[in-house]
Length: 293
Length: 227
Image 1 (cartoon, chains in turn green, orange):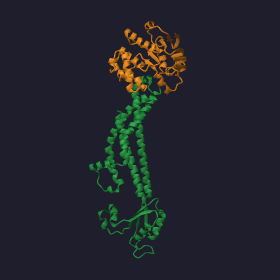
Image 2 (cartoon, helix red, strand yellow):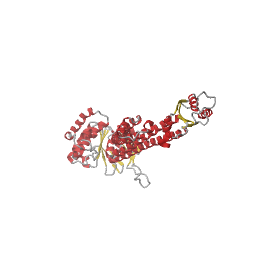
Image 3 (cartoon, rainbow over the protein chains, first blue to last red):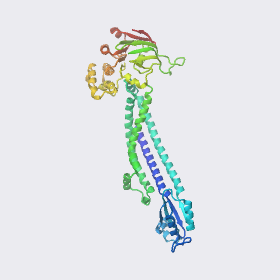
Image 4 (cartoon, each protein chain N blue to C red):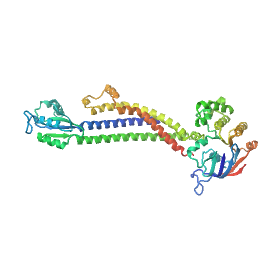
């Protein structure tokens, strides 16, 4: 019975680890991606900017030049027409490129380090090309990052809870084993066996049972974790966002590309289960033995 | 070897007496047994013989008085000091208490293993001990397949394999016929002759008459005879 319970606990632990890893990965992705970007929209991009303007200079050129000269900005990339059309397609459908709408220029900006003073930058852009809007993703990303951290904490708490329940189950099983072998234990005690010796006998058995259960739970959890990783891949890798749902070949490929944390933590689960089994059983037996002189 | 001064013992307080305190099963025992001595431990059932043996086997600590075994104050010693003391004491139980999942050989070898004797060095001693008690042919057999006399001899072999300084026996002839009982007495006397202090609890008066020796006699938890 003990291996079955530990197998179930290990399965849940594997899911908790996968959840923690997923939350951490998403949080990192949001933090490093969206939080470090700005979107600048320039209405009437082809119109001349505020004087003085060079010959042929447009509002978009002025904004791009100003952004490139601003400390704290890493890259400045005006989106092309096709990219703008792609942005509109979800709202306007496949005919978006045929519509003769006066579209603003959109400039994608990535910031470096702490980034520029956004209020001051917006004021300078407004002065250079009135109507220019600067959109920072920071507040939303901070909220999402907080959500990700909360999910990570919950996953780790679930992991700790699973470990605690597993330890409690092992303690109960060990006490039952002690009750059924009381005479043997008392005989060993009377022959001069130390608490360590007696506890070690029970702990080794509990450890083996827990390791067996841990191995079974890990094997059962592996395909589930791989499937979850394959489904989550597009959320942390934008280039996969348009791909279809993963097929079996994708799942097998994902198995070899699991995040390093999962690659070492999943095989570590049976070892961890064995360690918990050993320590919990040792503690239970030693506590029981203290009733003897 | 053994020095008892005003030793008392009671077991918890769940079966307490009229005033709520547990009644003492042993009261004010004072006696000395020198090293290499022999004592019969006599008294009717319920007199406290088994309780005194429990104290001498360090299966319980005195709740009153002072009990000194081989230089160790049993009442005051730290718990982690007691296993080493127990390994210097051999105990033969009336019901043998052999471990059913081990062979006779492994039962007899157990005290040596607990003492940390390497496997390569214990085989010869165990084999010699089994030969001494006449159990060589059943060394690989589980205890449940042995006769009562054979189980008793295996229990004695286990008790003396570590050459204990103190050997305790609780009604050791209780499950044996006269012939086996006499053979057991020869074994115990041989151990005593080799220097082991031996204390044998019994209510078999005929056995004591055939092997006269000094005795501790208990009645209702009190010592009524010493010598």
